[in-house]
Length: 213
Image 1: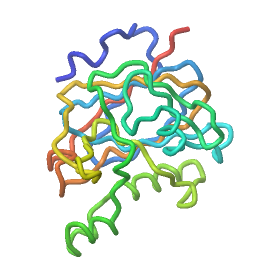
Image 2: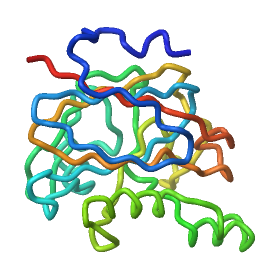
Image 3: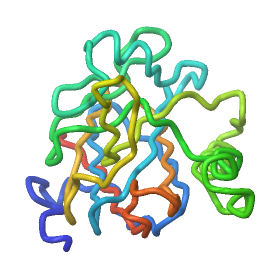
Image 4: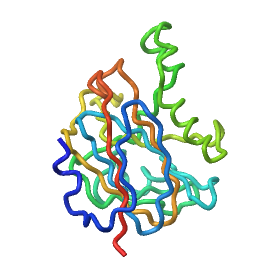
């Protein structure tokens, strides 16, 4: 399942390597020039993702600027993640899947209750994971912005609506992002189990950071 996780990486260059259990939050500073690899260990696992300038949290990922600059709502190799100040925070340098979502947003207790029933309101959700991880750095609700969903399959219908359907990532699928400046990366390993984004079964991911210098 993890045979491809270290493909192309010199083990001597690895500075961080952790398996993040299903449903858990995560945050880590990735320094300029370092590369973060996200590994979908089990396949079909959505990874909700935010990124901030590590020296000025007011500068953070901007979905509108990223989409407008690339004229594309999907991300893959070569995509640049733009900030609210128009700077590039990270760049995707490798991707074994080919398409990642910028539009589906993050699940919350409120959206779970609206979409799936009041009895689902108390289930853990990505917004709560984000707030937990942001809290480690003194950030909170006002710092939440639209997020990226790596490995999540959100096609657009001919009528223009979004759908959340079975994922297209296989066990061991990877996406690599190089930091263009020092950044704070915040992740929710999505706990959603009411729609197909995780195949109704959230699974662990692996997070590897390495340096080329």
